[in-house]
Length: 241
Image (cartoon, rainbow, N blue to C red):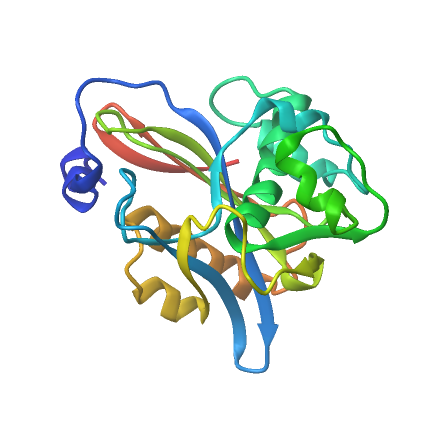
């Protein structure tokens, strides 16, 4: 895809000058149902500067401090290797922080705590919900579905890893949602229907990748090839990690 096409599709995010992309993580939560796999998406508040009113997966910027949060189980080695692969240098600690940021943001925005029931203690303020509800965060079930770097010339640029987890990986679901209220509404939709919702262009692309991966193996085993989208020159390209 040419840069001009990307600009047209996501023109609402255009800005001035280059900006270094920041690490970000988002989580695609999946639910197995008789009618097929459903995915959780939520609508961002219209007042947000970035992607206002769009349906998105829970997620946000990575906090490097998340790498020091204790977990019940670590990342699968094959998934950690994919998080570390590709453009730029990603250490073990950085990969761990990215994965844990996806877990934390899913709690903050959707009120879903991924992990195992049991005692958990940390002094980090962003993780006190896990302490209060007795959930030890777990990374073993996370799978990397895709990676995408926002093209240059945007108001905000992110190097986003799209991770997935199954609803059965959720230890606690808070009926009132997450504490930040960043998403106005949360809905579970079949993957095909989610693609037709008011989602950003890259989200629609990632949902298409998810469809293909589920068709190849509905269990989403670790180590599947992962697409990586980024701009090289004036073209938005796709390569596999």
